[in-house]
Image 1 (cartoon, helix red, strand yellow):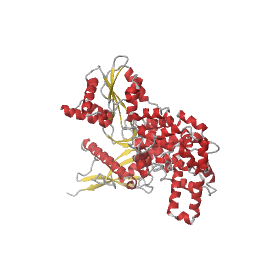
Image 2 (cartoon, one colour):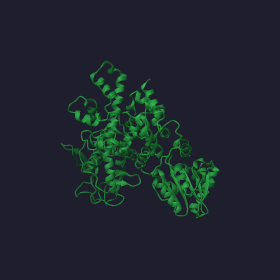
Image 3 (cartoon, one colour):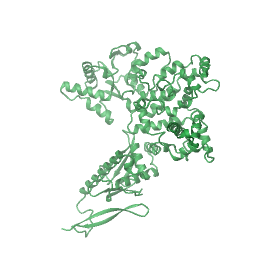
Image 4 (cartoon, helix red, strand yellow):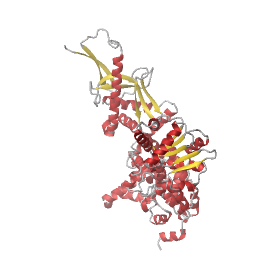
Length: 631
């Protein structure tokens, strides 16, 4: 009898198998219907498990708004997967609506409240035909703009769908719909909607808060309590499902995992990625259940005995699952959350120190202590027998190790170790900074800058110096080291020139008496923003939104990278910013009284130029040169 059959006979039906099967349906499978709120109630009835309950401060606000008796209607907006239908259903239940009535096939539902008001629910505007949609939106308009309190609306809709339906209705009525512009401003510019319209935009909820809530709700679900009596983790066996869940909970010093993942999610959000709750639930399910040998890449309890028997626990590593390493690449990249996390290059990127530790630490006595503490201490996903064996063959240069397949196997294992190291390195491990193992090596500096601006503290001098040095190198195309002033330079006419040695003006690196650079926080996007004032007074400055990738670009350039080698897109953005500064300086110069900036005795047929030159130690300075023009 095989070991797998022996374990299976001991285990029988694992006590948490029903719960794990339910959680599996939230994962990134080709047909994960449980991600849609409409299917959840039926699935829960079939499996007889408690639902995954998320903290929803927005739902509490929605319920409070309706119960307050305030006039007007409600719009629950967001993108696909933000939980619009979930919030709509939560309000229905809170107001006394029955689950049976909610589950019926009617697309528009009415509910009479205890105070006599009538609420009209539309759980998905996109499901309505044009005639139904027009009727609903006209009722919505009467409630929000015309003071009609006979009924109030509760509509769940995508941003674009709502604006498109309002536009089409306006076209059919031969007018510009009066709600389209206010809602468009509210969605895109964080403007205020009409007084009688309560807008709840679920897409504006911070992704990090949603991630922490989802991980807590999944990893702390009470159904996991049944695992305590499971034979799959008895007698020294390691169940990869339980192990991944334990690490998510923060066991064995793993608390840094969710915090580091939250940092990645924050940076992804500030780079423009939107990660709805639906994707975060799929991520949580995949982190716990992912394994490439399981059907569709997601384990059920019935897979565990076979995985244990084949010694394949290490392939279930949540440090790879978080990036979708257990999934076919195409399926992983169909999910925005895996696509966003892949942009960090974790596993492919590394530092020489980290790779030296992973490759030579086992045999190098100088690295032995660090290897034992940071790698060998994890016998499940760290220094496993499989990794050490592949490492030995790779280092000793066995004939088989030179084969492409063997090299690929070791590199895959090395990538897995890099991912694990990123999440497990201590915060103050100076020899191995974990941000250097990503494509965003200055990601930590960016997040700290955002935190400082949020708390109205000064940003660090080292960050300011890097930004100014990077700005100067982009503005001039020269490898100058200046960190206390900013050159606004041109080539004499072509503002997009990458090498510019004519200094049109200079500005201090710190705002002083209304002139110079200031870092501020854009409250609409939560991003940092560079604001360079060329003269005191309102309207004399130019702002540049600083996303994480633009911040990384400037810091990389400051440290010696060639601008075009990192990102041509960022370089073009910076050159466009330089062009705006040059135009602003030209406008300021034209607005000054004639002769204000001219020295006495300067000939009329001459012009004064300032050329940027570089001293011996790399510091740039502007040298005035008078050019006489022959007539």
